[in-house]
Length: 199
Image (cartoon, rainbow, N blue to C red; front, side, top):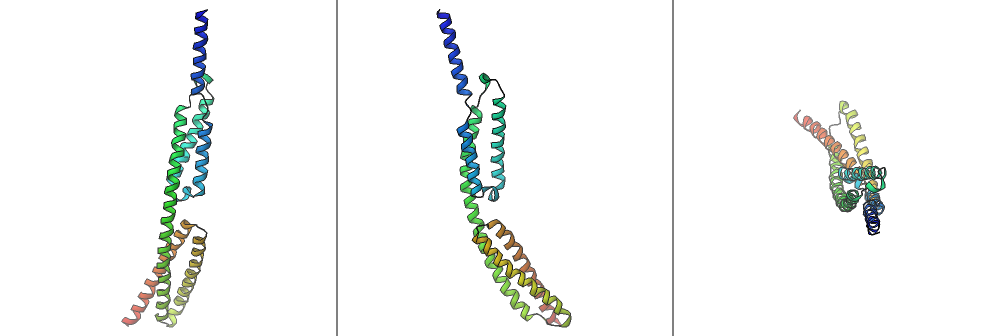
C-alpha cells in the first residue's frame, strides 16, 4: 500500500514539475509582440533599423522555438529558456524605443541646421546669378541655373512639409541632396564670374 502511495506521489510530482516547465509563455509572448508594435509606432524600425531587425529576428526565433516545443511530448516540453528570451526581448525593445526617440530628435536638429544652410545657399546662388555674365553663349546656361534654383526653392517647401509631418529621415535625404545641388550651382556661378573677370 505504501509502495502504491509512493508511486502515485512520485507521479503527481513529475506531472507538477513537467507542467511547470511545459507552460506556454503566452503572456511573455504577447508582451514581446506588443513591444515590437509599440516600437514601430515611434519608428524604431526606421531610425534604428539594424537593432530593430535584430530584435524582430530574435522574436521570430522564439516563435520557432515555441512551435518546436509544442511538437514534443507534453512531459518533455520546456519553455524556460524561451520565456527568459522573451522577457529580455521586451526589455531590450523598451530601451530601443528610448534610443529611437533620441535619434529622431537628433535627425530633426540635423535637418533644421542643414535647411538653414540650404536657404543661405539659395540666397547666395540668386545673388551670384544676378552677377553672372549675360553673353549670348551663357544665356541658355543661366536659364538652366535659374530653373535649378526654382526647383531648390520648391524642395524647401517640400522639406518644410515633411518636417511638419514628422518625417525627418525623408526630409534629411531631400535636404542633403538639395544642399549638394545648391553648392554645385554656387561653384558653377563663381567659376563663370571669375572667368569673365580674367578676360
